[in-house]
Length: 620
Image 1 (cartoon, one colour):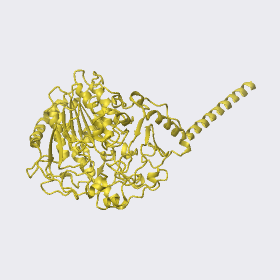
Image 2 (cartoon, helix red, strand yellow):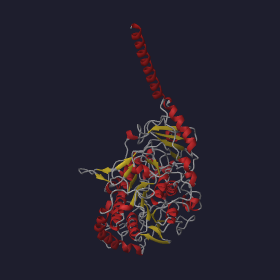
Image 3 (tube, helix red, strand yellow):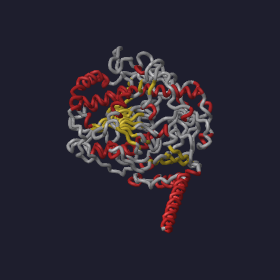
Image 4 (spheres, rainbow, N blue to C red):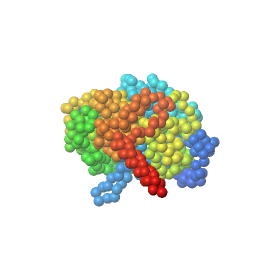
C-alpha cells in the first residue's frame, strides 16, 4: 500500500498486557547497577597494550572477542552529531553517550557509505558482505524482496549469524529484521532464521512501525501486543497506553514500561548477561527508530520522557545547502520536473526531523546501557561495538522529502563508529568503507570463515592504522523505482499527496525516477548513471551538498570517462573483483594543461640555462 494511503486508513488496535518477560525489567536494572562498579574495576585492570596475537592481531590468542552491532533505521549522519539549543539555553547533544562511549573511545569512519540505500538490500549486505546484485535481495517488496525474498535465497543460511554460530559464537538478534517479517500472507512471524541462538524480533515492522502495540517473536513464541498502539488516525494515546514519564527506571503508575526502544535495550542487557562465561557472543541490535510510524504527527514516536525535548529543531540543511534547491537544471529529469516544496511540506518534515531527534535519545541511552552491562560483566575490554544505520533520509535536499533510495549524500553517507581492542580512542579515518565491509571485518576479528564469497573487505587494517589509504571503489546500485518511503514505484496522486501533507502526514515529494541507476564512489568523486542516459558527477570534497553536477563540464571529461569505465568493471563484480584497487584517477583537462605548460616552461628554462653556459664557454 502506498504510504500516503496509510494516513487515511482508519484502524483500531486492541490493548493487551505485555508478556511476562517485562516483569524482569526492574530486577535486571538493579543487577546491572550493582555490578557496574566491579565491572569497571575489571575493565580498568585489563591489558592496555593492544596485544596482537590472534588472526586480527588485537587480542591474546586464547580470547575471542564479543561483538555488538547497533543499527538504526533511516538515521542520517547529521542527526548523529546534531545539537539543539532551546530558547535561552545551552546546546544539547542529541546522542552524547554514543559520541562519548563509542566515537571518543574508538574510531569514526568519515567516508562510510551504503551501496544500496534501501532497508532490506542494505541490511542483507551487512549480514553477507555482498552487494545486492550478488545476494539478490533487491528490494523491500514481497515476494522477491523483503523477508520472503531473503528466506528462499542463499543469504538466509549463509551470513554472519550462521558463520559465527559455526565458529562457536552465541548469536542474538533483537529488534527489526527485514521488511515483511510477520506480514501475512507471505510470513506469519513464527520463523527463526538459521544461525540465531536467541531471537527477539518485531513483527510487521514495515506495515506499522509501532512503538507501542507491537508484537515480538521471542525465540519462536509470538508475544504481545506490548501495550496499545493508539488510534490510527491521530496517534492519540490515553494514559494507560503511553509509558509513564519515569520509564524505564521508575514508572510512577506501577505499570510495565513498554516503549519499544526501551524494551530492546532491556532485552540486549538480558541476553548479554545470560551468555555463559567463556562463550563469545554476537548481538545485533536493530532499532526501529528513528523511522517514522506513518501517522500524525509526522515521524517516529519518542519516549514519553523525551517528547518535545527538541521542539523547534531546524531541518539539518538550509536553502544554500540544497533544501528546496532553486537551480536544478543540472539534475536528472525527474528532479527537474519536481515542484518546489510547499511551506506545509517543509513544516511536516521539520516536525518529522524533530521527532527523529527525540526518538534517538532512547537509543543513545541504550548505547550507555550496553556499555554499562558489558562493563558490569567484565567483558567491555574484549568487545567490539559498531554503531551505524541502514540508510539515510531526505529532508528537502534537492526538493526531495520522504525517501532515501537515491545515491545523494543524505541517503548514502552514514554514521559508522567502532570501538574495541587495538583501536585508538578518538581516532578517525577517511578511507572509503561500505556496509559490505562489516561482515568480513567481524569474521577476521572472530577468526571465523565464510562459506560463500564476500565482496567487501576487512576494515581491521584501516581502523588500527588510520593513515592507510587505497583506491578501492564503492558501487552504488538500485533495482527499484523511487517515489515513496516504503512502496516501490507506485506513483502518488496529486490528491493523495495534498491530503497527506495537509493533515500532517509524510509522503513522497516527486514521482519515480527511471529504474535501475548505478554509480561509483572513488577518491573525491561520486558518479551516477541513469538508464535515460543522464549522468551526474560531483566532487564531494568541494561540493558536499551536490549542487554542481560536473558531468557536462568539458574540464572533467577525463574523470567522467575514467569513472564510467571503472563502473563498467564494477557493476557485475563478485568476490575479489569487487575489492580491486583502480588505477590512479586522471587529472582534469585544466590540470593536465597546467602541468603541460609547467613542463614546457621548465624545458624552456633548461634550454635557456644551457644556452647561457655554451655562450660563456665560447667566450673563454
